[in-house]
Length: 161
Image (cartoon, rainbow, N blue to C red):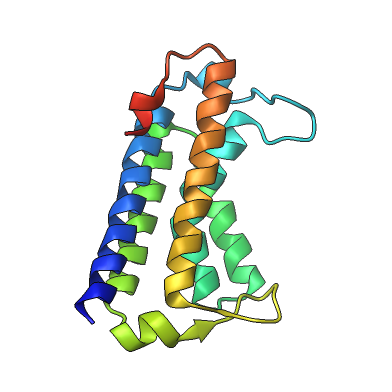
């Protein structure tokens, strides 16, 4: 089952790449733009960055079946971050915790252990959770990229690779 570990490693490598490129994008943002909101019904740039950096740590808590109060507490802590350095540190620390969790799973648990978030009736296996976390982070990194383009930042596809 070496293929299972190879797939896990590929997904973790991709998430690490998303963390690194997200941090580089966030570092380019001028603090005067944190309040930018494309529309009234959308997050501000700071709120989006805070949500993006929360993905590894908060999603880890969710897949570990932590309750809603614990999740909200973690989100509130992350939402206190207001500098690019603080935001990047949150994302990197969350990634390191998630990576350690995933690497410590046996192949059997990675493929078959299902956990259920507090907001759903059914759970997902750990492999699916890892795929979901990668796509979740990638989605919000793309949103951040688009916000930055709208603000006139010189970012392009090379900032994503």
